Length: 402
Image (cartoon, rainbow, N blue to C red; front, side):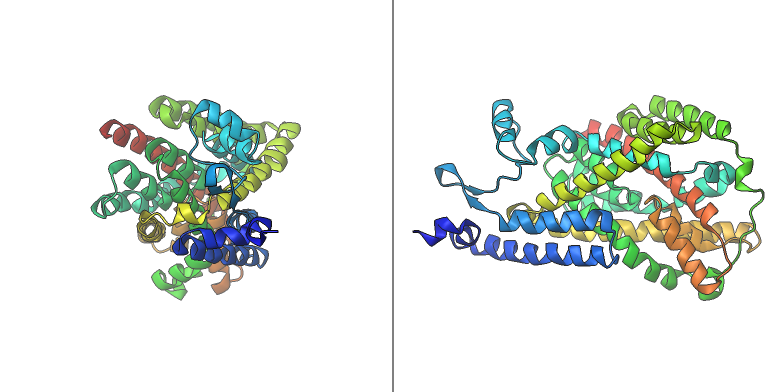
């Protein structure tokens, strides 16, 4: 019995180039470490646990295929021929999920629909100018990273796609990279989701670095109670904002439709749809999103020399976005006579509800009685809108330049 053929996962390590074999081993270890960090809740468990398992499994489960090829039976992200796709969908067990939901952006829209059901636009309507002002400042990462990325050798489409990591909105990055950077959309999406989970770990330190302790504990008095915003007002906002944004930026219309429809369903009180969108679609799509991202982390894919550039640009984009948001928080702090907590600025980075919770947590560490979550959620929801607008602009303008 040929032991190499019997235990093919190990045997293929000796049949591949040393760099790929070492990369596989490193990614197996990295995948298991991501699972550990997800379980410990150091990183986002909803993404990291399935992603880590997928990363470890796809790099361990490599086998010898027909005609001397080496690969896996998970999925092929690069297959485009129709006949080949139909054949491979009968073999690779995740290929139908990938081809029918991931590679066309559907899974991003499903996540957005679910996010709409857990978002309260009442916070935005209560503090519209403050929320939008902060969100616009937080787009510093997505705007400033674009010329940096182009200067580092990426073409306009690739540069725009990686710059949008600064919006801290994974589905948006997935959607835009499919439109602008098809050759790099797999590594860009992986980088985006890896770094979005790092917001949990990294942003608190950035807040402490930028904002002095005595400012982090400032209490903000709301002008009126949140329940003064009636459900019908929120539904009217969803209808008007969703339609207007689709009219202005049709290339991002699926994302606008998904988010505002999900929110309108929540406010209309259709509980069966709410349960479907939140409990089934949101968490189901998030689970498969994490699993597919892990399975996409093959050593042969991630050894692309552009990956290092993308890793650096992803950090730059997210860091600049947080700093930009906090600068916006400082500006509001000055204009309100020092009665605004600048920590709220970090929530302008649209990672709902992560950045809002980070802002609340860091403020509460200094002042246990402070409550800034309403302001933070308003800024975070505005961040989703401004990032979607910027996505539409990038796809329209940069797409016409390619």
